[in-house]
Image 1 (tube, rainbow, N blue to C red):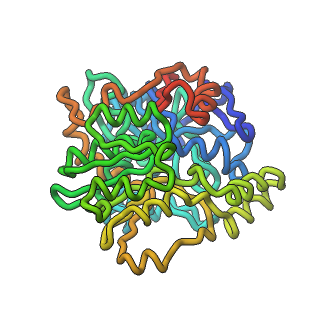
Image 2: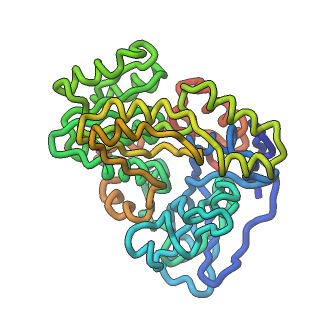
Length: 394
């Protein structure tokens, strides 16, 4: 089969690799029909190479058709249409039954002290072959795949793999009161969808903040109050307070993470690891790694006293400094974590109707053959051509 593989920093290629096979009695093999390019894939493209090997298959946002099933699979049949969550979760362990699918005890990566394994996402999370490929082996075939209806286009459902549950959890964790206010930092796929979900769930004031004009325009067309960080600079806090009775919003979602613009020192520290052998770079990143924290610091500054900061953006630093004095003084609640995808899919699926309240049908900005994935990664990383969401057809 053809699959998108990592070969080095900013070097991904579509290779011919062996087809996946059934390895456990409850495995299924899915023929991938659509698969997404995620902002967190750019962390692999740019920063986390120390935890990858050449040939690792990337991608964690697939959907498709069941091609083969193991002998113990009873919940799906060949020909069923399924979405594959990016968490690899068993659905039956202590953590899963409590809705913490991203902490699944069956697939935790004990060698690195991390949570549930993820498709296509480094040794830190199991080094499991990903979904930017023609076929994908999916474990826990009775509990993990999300069965979706035949008929509507893939765009209707593919975001159940990551974008929708990640944004839904971000809004859930933000705990905005009815008629309240929320600001979203970063209007990439997760931030954009978080704005839509927050408005759908009753937030009266939704503020979207970004640097990219096309992303601001896209959110503005859906009724979001947009603020251009590039224009406002140090005036951002005052502008947000002007929209929120002088206090700041009830909640702020950081949908940016480690790719934030900001600290040159942190950026340089990340870059130094590229010059080191992988084994040493991995140790440094796990023990003394730092992130660019400008987005998280902005969230803490913007939110009202007694408010909530919800972190959806991925961070990877081990010793990131936080302004604990400010957080304590403002009496903030901070919630974060990988999306517990299977916790939210049943809540979201009924919204994926022809009425399309969240705008999923036209959410993608680019639909490309998988063979064009290398150029798509570069385009997305450099924010060219109004790129917000790319879907590949293998």
